[in-house]
Image 1 (cartoon, rainbow, N blue to C red):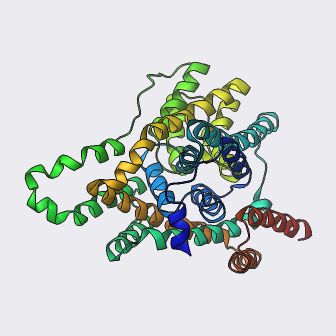
Image 2 (image 1 turned 30 degrees about the vertical axis):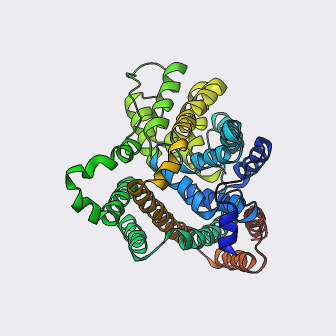
Image 3 (image 1 turned 45 degrees about the horizontal axis):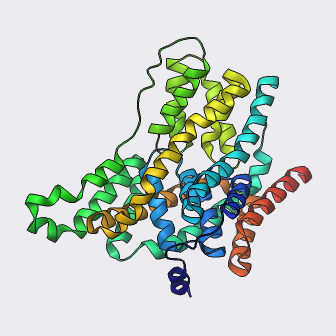
Length: 395
């Protein structure tokens, strides 16, 4: 059955931009849990339920999203919108995925400026986090079965998982495993043609390079132009999660510009973590705190604009990556590396989420519903939120 589904969706069936916009508006509203959870929910919607793309194509687009700077799950949404509905789909899917989170973060920022504190959402997340762990595990199982095409790729995934948990840099792991798998798969050809061995790699190196630039801002009084350029720079150079973004935000806004305190940066990242959608909407919060509504809008546009440009530039190359012997090996390595990183994040999320009997019971219930009824992940997230709220109201 899986093979038939994959074959039927192998090139992606074209649809309307409206259906792409509707889907990603929904996902932007209910996709809690960070990039790994977002990717799992997207897979459930576009591969399993709607069959817009095959598992293989989904993995290739995920690998391409991990090769460029910016929020990987947002870029995957943009890729999927492009795949489904062309240029209009590219724009609408990204905007619709970002917009709900932006609005929620903007509301929290308004309350923060007015009252000086962020809201406490722990009661809500107590029920959502265990559900997210189950959703990610389900997605990982399906994606691993597609991505792991033999002992080499299985070993690569295990190596990335182990090294990530040991504290190695995730971006270095991703590119390193891609290069290693490429070399191993093409070792015999490399030995035969060692004088030309580097000929197939320029594209890979180019994709790995950052497209960042220096905004040239010095320590100065606040200005909207400086705010926009700082976030445009961050959107152009930052790989990885919101925790990686935290280090860049602290360097720019606390040390270099002096506009915020350490506590304000931590509050901003916390709001980005407990709202649905991309964690990079932390920029919306910071923009509002330092520059009001115009600052919030400019900061949001600045940090996400590079993602749209990178996806538009790289999308036509994804098919070449799969067709080229060298680049295909690299993409295979990146794909299993990304899944190894997702597995590592899932382990960390699980330790943080399954903290008591209630959380474990919610996880078991979610797992039973997934296995028995194949229930939509959106309903699972909403159900977890309701259970978390009820538990704390009755406790």
